[in-house]
Image (cartoon, rainbow, N blue to C red):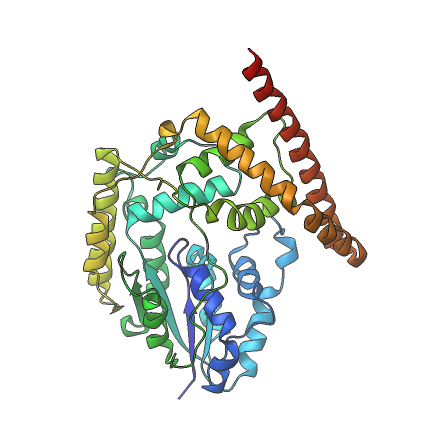
Length: 382
């Protein structure tokens, strides 16, 4: 009987970063139980998925990813036992991409793992993810782009529904596992527990504290990033944008206490996202997939009362206070950042280019900080 290959396809904003981090941290423990997480570095599954679906990222070009899917397949073939692969980019696969996966893993029993979340939470997370990646849209402008029940069939079920249909055609329903996102207040490890119940991993001695998650930010924090990116001349290089997202956001913005949740309150939007969630649940039931968790959790979370705020609720005083906090953070960390830059310069290559641009970004922020202090001083004098 062929060994199983568990392919987690996301989609984005469904706890995938959290799951991938725990899989990476537990890779040796997985192996002692006969399960291989085939990766030489934490980014290897992203690179393989990007190669397969022909997508790069802000810090890496599509050309750089060429051949990475076949490299991952080679690692999979080397293990005589179950393997687990995870990245949300797999949810963007076309039917041709899926056929490639099926052909390349023909000697395996392919299982698809899909983490399901309600549509409203997905769209709210996508908004702030766009902001962290340099988008300049307000909540209101973002909402205008959202699908409604009157849109075409693909939009009625969203990207999640499209992935369900595309990947669902590749395996029998009992090998398509829908793992529902636990509702607020659930045990913090419940999503990982559900995931591991599918792949057969006993978590008794596992690492259960993730060191990396895709952190959420509040309304004030998102509005600061949005205005920073909206300023004339704020066309950050990909490397600088990567630095903002992976250093400034998780190490400072996401750590602030008392953040005010950002989300949607418009009744029409809430009705549209509720309908999309309902359609996704109906599709999962129609296709008779294996459900780990409870589909009722998705609709219950969708109907929960929103207490979130939009960018219009953020005051200039809040933004000035956060801008000063941000400046102090950069000043406190400038020495360490400069040490990083010098270490990277010694290594050369792509790291050299990236560290140089980070140094330029720090210099730009210092200049901006001096300008902000002068502006505030002038206001006090007037």
